[in-house]
Structure formats: structure tokens, C-alpha cells
Amino acid sequence: MSQSIVILTGAGISAESGLGTFRDEDGLWAQHRIEDVATPEGFAHNPKLVHDFYNARRVQSMEAEPNAAHFALAELEAKFPGTVLIVTQNVDGLHEKAGSQNVLHMHGTLHGALCHACDHRWPAPATMAPHDPCPACGTPATRPDVVWFGEMPYGMERISNALAQADVFVSIGTSGEVYPAANFVNEADMFGAHTVELNLEPSSGVSRFAETHFGPATQVVPEWVAAELTRSN
Ligand code: BJW
Image (cartoon, rainbow, N blue to C red; front, side):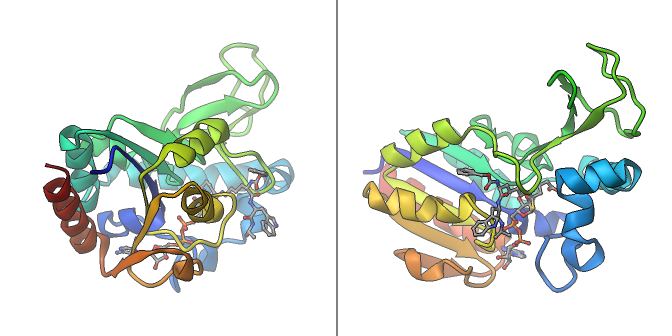
């Protein structure tokens, strides 16, 4: 019986809630240059463009509702006799909206603001602008509290410890193109976890998973959760 499950989620789990993925044909990176909107250099060059990009996504995510896959993971956390940790690359907040509690936002959150002068964090207003002053130090240096390319993702020590303890590692709706998340399957495997991929299509790391199920998240995630809860009880 498994005691500890670590679940990595990516944009694919929120696709059926109406939120765009990044690298699919009609994804966000087909409409915006990564260098312009998801790097510290892009933000320094044109903060208004970057704020506009995240303001639009913040509104979309506030309007979005969790889908059957988010709810299935919340049910797993509530009913599984061991621990369930969701490590999400998503910034949309839909896991919490579905009722999950043990969620680590390794790429930050659309619902947070960060002062890059003093590192103060506070809840983001619906719309942010380049000259908004930080409520703590007053500097007009506020940015979305998300992790861009070249920045260190959040919670890496906690994630490494969880992967080392995991009996099962599940990757859901992520392309496996972005590190360090793309390497979690190797870390978990090295420490002896059973590794599972649930995705619409095989990710670039598919050969590293012991078990795979392909289909829309709203189908394959509830099926896998039901099977896992049957196994554990
Ligand atoms: C469905 C579905 C449905 C669709 N149902 N599934 C060279 C080699 C290796 C690494 C590097 C390198 N050069 C640079 C790097 C490092 C760099 C990196 O990885 N670059 C790569 C591009 C090569 N990484 C970084 O810079 C990271 N930091 C870092 O490495 O720090 C140093 C460090 C050192 C040592 C240890 C630890 C760290 C930071 C990365 C930050 C990424 N930020 C973004 C933006 C966040 C804010 C925002 O949301 O705007 O994060 S980029 C974007 O990609 C976002 C996502 O979280 C991330 C991953 O995307 P995801 O979720 O996988 O989405 P997609 O679109 O790629 O895939 C969707 C999937 O869903 C697909 O598989 C579909 O099939 C599936 N799907 N519909 C189920 N209905």
C-alpha cells in the first residue's frame, strides 16, 4: 500500500477549464514570445506588456472553474490514508478552488504580487501596473509573483525531500519541456517511487515512466484516482 504520493501538475490539467496551455498548437507561446513575457529581462524591457499579459490571465483564472481532474485530486487528498502533495507548475489557483490543501506552487501564483526591491509579497489586485507602489517599502517595483525563466522555482528543498520519500510519483498534463520539473520523474525513480504519467499525449519524458495513461485529464485523472483509492483501502 502506498503511503506517500507526489503529484506534479502542468497546464494540461486546467485546459478543460478553459485556460490555455503553453506549448500546444494554439497555446500561449504561439501568441507571445517567451523572452518578452516570461523572463526578468522581458519585464525590465517592457513591464507594461508583461503586466498586461498577466492581468488578462489573472482575470481568466478568476473566472475559471476547476474541472473533474482537479476535484478528483482533492478527493484523493481527503480519502487517501497517507500523504498527498500536489506540486503544481500552474499559477491559476484551481487546485485550491477544488478543495486541495497540500499544494506547492513551484512557479508562483497569478494571485500574488512581489516587490523586486524588498521581496515583500501581498495578494495581487485584479489589475497591476508598472508604477504601483509596494505597500511595504513604497518603491514602484511590483511584479507578479511568478517564476520566470532563469529564476529559481519555489520550494525546491521541500520538493526534493518529498520526491525522496515518495512511493508514487504522478505527472499530469505537463509537456516535460521545462526544468527542473521535467527531471522530477528521474529523481522519484532513483529513490524507488512507482512513476505514472497521465497526459493527453506522451510527454518528452514518457519513456521514463513505468505506467502511462493517455486521454483528457477529466477522464484519466478520475479513473486513476478511483483505482488508487481502491488499492489503498
Ligand atoms: C493535456 C490536455 C488535457 C493538453 N488533458 N493533458 C537547457 C537545458 C535544461 C534546462 C535549461 C536549459 N536552458 C535553460 C534551462 C532552464 C530553464 C528551462 O527549463 N528551459 C527549457 C525551455 C529548456 N528553466 C528555468 O529557467 C527554471 N529555473 C531554473 O532552472 O532555475 C535553476 C535551477 C537550478 C537547479 C535546480 C533548480 C533550479 C524556471 C522555469 C520557469 C518556467 N516558467 C513558466 C512561466 C510561469 C508563469 C506563467 O504561468 O506565466 O512556467 S514557463 C511555462 O512552462 C510555465 C509552465 O509552468 C511551464 C511548463 O509548462 P507545462 O505546464 O508543461 O505546459 P505545456 O504547454 O508545455 O504542456 C501542456 C501539456 O498538457 C502537454 O503535454 C499536453 O499534451 C497536455 N494537455 N490538453 C491532459 N485536456
